[in-house]
Length: 301
Ligand SMILES: [Mg+2]
Image (cartoon, rainbow, N blue to C red; front, side, top):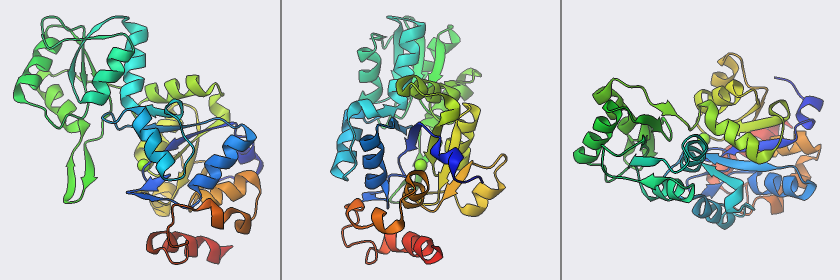
């Protein structure tokens, strides 16, 4: 792990969201303050999500509701990145979709045409689809066997629900792969494509841009593949031990975004407290979720 000047040389940030900016409905420590300060000093940033079902505008509204400054232009979803990649490669192409409104709208907005006929499809796009039927998987498989391209918005096999882990987009992608013996081309994290798309939007050099994430196998690995610097935070899935064991390890590891805020802007902990944590309804000391992270951090410093 390196410290100091290399970190302060960064000129752009790509944020994973769940486990970095928020967890459930709770905004995580330091997120509003760090984003606000980036905007204030003119450092560009983006929020990146593998979620393909929710349009970018709704993601931005949710962030604003948590006290994070964001517009639809600040958010990249895997659906939007998929649509942009396909629009560049096959303008006006016909897409057969296994997916929800977020994917369909993104493809149409990018100029592609939707089709339900497997004989008519240039590309099959598979993402999360909570109304997926056998007939839809059948059409997808027939189109791919006929020669249509096979693209996946994201590879996430499962995601957490109240009752436990439930099937994600990757489970449907897997069903079509098994039915066709054709591997999907993946756009979302940890694939290169979504990071390349994000870099084009930011307009920054990879070596001066960092991905900030909580998962070694998606955020860190994907960022490293794309030639980005990588910053891990411990407010989500990955533990300090997992990040330390990851090869090569992330460039920096912070307990939370308060730590990153302090190191990047060189501002003390007291300045980063208080008003910068509006999502912590009870104040950080009394908030049972925030408390554990902050205690560990501030006790050490
Ligand atoms: Mg995450």
